[in-house]
Length: 340
Image 1 (cartoon, rainbow, N blue to C red):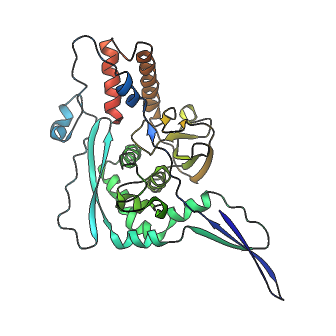
Image 2 (cartoon, rainbow, N blue to C red; image 1 turned 90 degrees about the horizontal axis):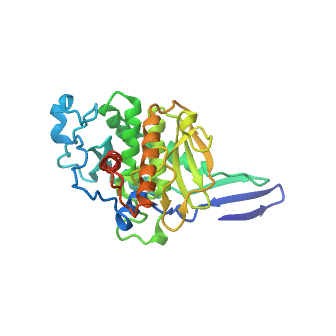
Image 3 (cartoon, rainbow, N blue to C red; image 1 turned 135 degrees about the vertical axis):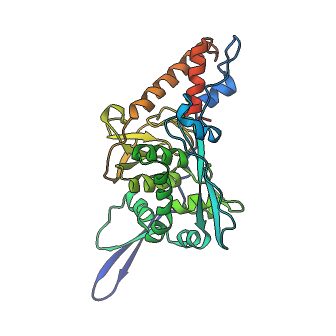
């Protein structure tokens, strides 16, 4: 909403612009195709069922090198901090890396959260003519706030400590943000009173909608050194993250791979359906940071193709994947990315 106020006196005339965001982008959560399969047409092996492909959990970390079903890296779960000081709390942030479930604890401070939450969500300009304002003008102040940076950069360092491979760090960050529950209001908060959270506030609340969770992921990926953008789907009232990647895997020749933040998903998968709006259509790219490309995206790209091919086969066969190999492949992809 824009309000224009004209102020005059004998020396000058100024047109004062107030640009006010009145509500958060309360985008619809993604509905993953496998959820529909489970509800309406579960792919069932009509022969004797086999166990899903094993994944490397914490119990296997010590024998990871010899366990052929484990990924090359093992990320044991973090230990919960004991007795945080008054005003602090430890938030568990879980993630999945190639089927291995793990997580880290991150300690957040109530005073920092409340100070960031109290900051105005407005931009004021003094000018004689209309000022062009973009969504980026509202996003960058939330990413660049120095109080937040001092208190959120330790999370980036915790992610870096998990592995020296920057591309694995990026995938952990993606999954970590995806696994933060989708939600708009905190307990006891009326929807009309909600203001969009800063990235730090998403962790404090352990909740966020697509725009808020996208800002958190943008902050982390930018600090890790990746080229990033936010992808704005105006018609669907949705935002996602773009991470710089090879042209062969980007979305619509944008130079960025699509990353959903509402919930767990495969990098490059922009084909899912969203509650009340369906599939995504046209979008605008807003560059946030320059940086390196994400490597190894061909793996996610191929997994996405296999996943949708299997869904199509199940669809034309009343939701059943009769072939044992295809069924196990479907289960392995779902487990690999923790698709809900």
